Length: 494
Image (cartoon, rainbow, N blue to C red):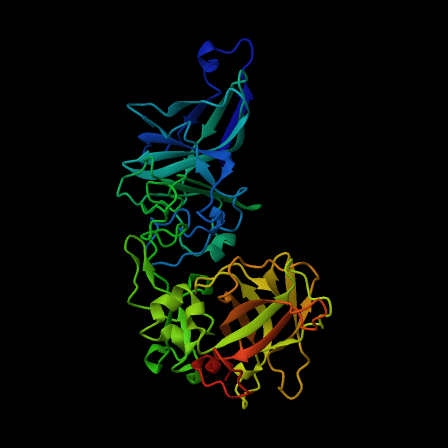
């Protein structure tokens, strides 16, 4: 078990141990053993600065290798460090840079001085590592050390030997020996310790496992590939996964990695995991990505969930445009609605209730598939955007969508429209349709994405009975009867 002691300096302590210019004095003592420690490094993390990726996801989702194993392997798919992580990972403290002390002769301890913030308390996490010939061999940790102005503390950390991990499987932690485990790595081909290091510390005993993770704030997986370009705002496409060390592409494309569309063929069904009824359907896919190289735009394997879009999205002439704006694919397949209001966006005085949004023509007549959920999105690209469940948002107005009772599959994908009574936000230019996307979940576990074209009109008179919204499914000019949709988007419903 690691030993750590901290106490506040008081009158009578040696002056060298209580300097007003520093907030903490840390002494790290090595353990006897072979090989002998020749270098001690003190990694410092900020408890008030949790480690996250560019999207704010915590570093508990980081994919390194297990503490004590070899450096992270690019070809591996290791498990995330979700279990037992002490309050999440932390970014390294830039005020207190990585401190390294070379030991010489018979020296068995190293001293470090930490600075705080004169105006407020700062809490830090410490991981001390003893190296022998560039390899980590001993370690210890101190949690939640408060640095206060004019209240310096003395901290003693006793290193313990690092236990070699027999297996890199996290499931084996209940049977692993008690002790200290450590993984320290970087992607810069530098021998630790270095300023580019990530440090994953673990203590295991009969009561459980505790982990602490410290990382640089611009490269939380320490693979030298950074999410942002030097301007700090533009994504560098060469970094695919900023919580996965040296990501080499995945065997499957998750739904949230959608970026392209491709006609699905039998040649792509290498594992036979998708139904042959999907052959020739235009499926949403993603470009495989490798850290350091970026997305491979020549490939577009389908996402985990088979998701059909209008076939125009896969047409050579319109594919590139449709991938960024699915409204460009609406000439063949779309749900078209007219929103009719008075000039102030309110319903006509004599307006009748909204009717239904019937997407059942998307379900082939011989199919028993039904729609199980509907959502809308104002993001028109294949890259998933925020979804609004069971509603079309024209803020502050909202049109709710409730499933119609299915009668012999006649209403396999129909929804009753409701209205919250608030004024519709009318676009400045109403001549051209405004677009959203409808995301449909199907009972066979497939999905469809259908363009929604919204046309705006005004009441002809105060007593107009025109409903505030009315919808018809069809092509650019006509509606189509049930079963008459021959676009390949219907293949997802077979």
